[in-house]
Length: 461
Image 1 (cartoon, rainbow, N blue to C red):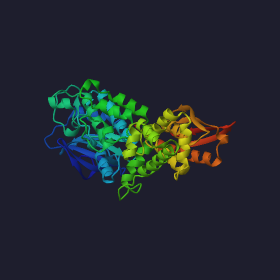
Image 2 (spheres, rainbow, N blue to C red; image 1 turned 90 degrees about the vertical axis):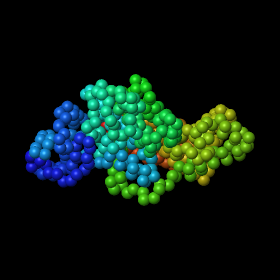
Image 3 (cartoon, rainbow, N blue to C red; image 1 turned 30 degrees about the vertical axis):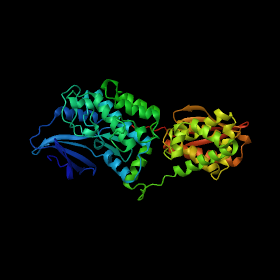
Image 4 (cartoon, helix red, strand yellow; image 1 turned 180 degrees about the vertical axis):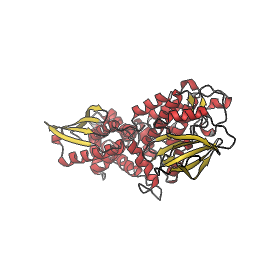
């Protein structure tokens, strides 16, 4: 290179337009990425200007320098220390793990935020795919490779990743932001299911993974609609994911960091504790029903309990089933409908008096909120607490971003051990689903216990 400031360390990759190298800034020791056009290729000044403009946005790599020398033109960009989404998915598959739903949401949110900036500048990425997204160790999401980008309305050209290709692109239509949204929808489906191939002819994650929230399934379906005009804008995708509750960047960094050795990975397939806990809870519930009302009434309640309970009986429901543990709540609602409101109390006591004890049932209530935001988790905990505890009521009085004020009614009549166990599991569940350590304070208010909860409201970009 004409300047001695940057030195090439090695070759990273090659594309149709350029070679990509890992380099270093000799003045600072900072690693960089150097993209050098192939011999005979002229610099694309429009793309260079676009890259420089977008480098101010955190979902794109920063441009540090550009120029030309005897070997041609080059661009120096920041080196993002992380893992491509393609490699992350491959590593998760090798570990026999699903990507956590909230991590998938955060990654899709970062990609959508980048596309929002790109589309706002009048450009279409044209190659949105797992290999063109980087997840930094900090949890930051970065869109890569603008070499295929086209101005909105430009003639169609060959795409590199057919699995993520919008159907209208096969017909030679012009580049539109809606095509990028389709590709983003397939990427999100891939994140949630581990495959870019649909099962039923439509990209519905619930066909593969029944713990995906209904609103998130709906978002994937809208993004991958055949009609481009019905797909949401990138900004609308961001807003929907924010409403569903994306986790903090630290939450994503913790997961991504585990693939770099920050947290030891499993060397054997993970053991799903869900079936054991579900089976014990469901078995205790059915035993209570049968002992109280007989086999015929028990079968009638099961028939009315809904599909989630039926899946649980077959062992097909996720331990993190959608809010608030549908397989369990469906059963209790059916029992209430048949035997009256007191059914919740005696059914809950029957479960708690089984071999599970209080801890087993609280594991279910914590599990109900693992992949959802803190407010969703707090609402779920109210339903599960009511199921277990006869005489107390847990409710959310006030909910703001990063803050909630809750009330445990009738706390004075509850055993001290139960209160302590409940608050401990509440704190654990908030930490697991919120991505940051909560700060809790509890004060007596007559017979009630007021609980104020504050947590770090970081949102991944």
